Image 1 (cartoon, protein in one colour):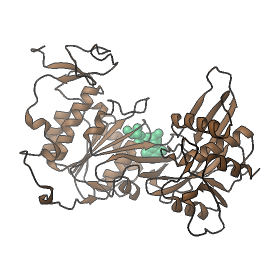
Image 2: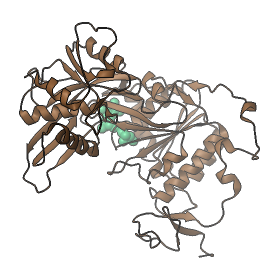
Image 3: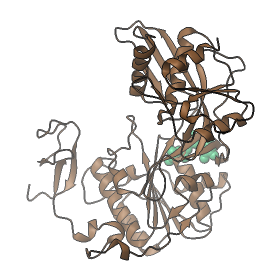
Image 4: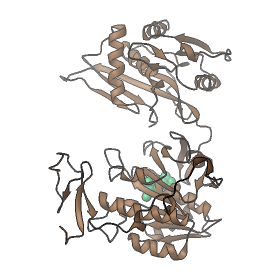
Length: 455
Ligand code: TYD
Ligand code: MG
């Protein structure tokens, strides 16, 4: 092994192997063994943030801060997701399913930035002709936008060090490979090592780096999330391809708030920002149907009105299905358990499906109450009024807990003509809202009774 410069290392327990294998004999984990360099890396290769030089101790009070300059991407939505714009020297990872619009978004962004500074777009997937064709079709400015079709990191960095672009885009990191490792491009070792070199260069040279990353079927970035730790900002594309709208969410941001959501519409002229998105997910049928209710969710700084749907049906399986799209599956099982325990309504022999319309992912518990209402509505086959809104977190002891930003949610709903809102007691509006009746509830039992008053 000492002769061989490459080694294979389990990412979970650190056991070393001379060659790859599927399962680690040290910790019995599968698919954790990754190719690595066996020689100690020269110190310069793995310097910390911005290539920190000597480790010196500094009193926090003595640290001077320079106001970080934020560069506008030309899109307010993207700026907001990034925390106010791009910071030079930062590494930004953009992840998403293939075909969701990562290349389009980046091309639009760098074309805008290319008007002010030198920008290099490295394309490992498409040819420069294809990229140019797209840029021309979208009518993008091309001033200082440089293209390069290459996949070898050392060669790319060689050019970059000479040309010194201020913005560097790598589309995509899965196509990159480094000559330090022998494994194929796209493998965890390659992705990690390539990204490490690129991020190091970005920090050292104060270049803003965008990395495009594909998401695997399981929903994680190929290369088990190794990239997330290396970069400053991680943005994920959400939404379904057959839906016109694309959501971009910041899941990690060293320079801004996380969970901020940027909303775009995919048009024949590329991605267009949607600046007033609160009602874009509200396209309900004219007739009220069972199993559907509107909630006001607050992803990031803005309230959004979305429809939560449920379908409850007789199960023909030994284990009835609980399937949830847009909400966490485990949360659904928990809601059904609380519903049974505190109101006696059983779904033991029923399949329960839950869906957030429009491909939006809701991570906050404020969707608990509307989810339960949608389930009840479907279970009893009774439609809820069209102008009814609900939000609230459901606790294990059957209590309805308040959610942050209640006032804003209610205001947004009132603006869109909702007439009734069932909300947690503590979220009751301090002022009366124009034409909206607010029904505060404290427990699930109360909430269910409240719902029954409509039928
Ligand atoms: P793309 O940016 O190539 O996706 P990714 O890089 O994430 O794989 O986007 C491709 C999709 O977007 C493709 O299915 C077509 C659609 N699209 C439009 O609808 N309008 C456009 O103007 C462009 C450029 C793409
Ligand atoms: Mg692409």
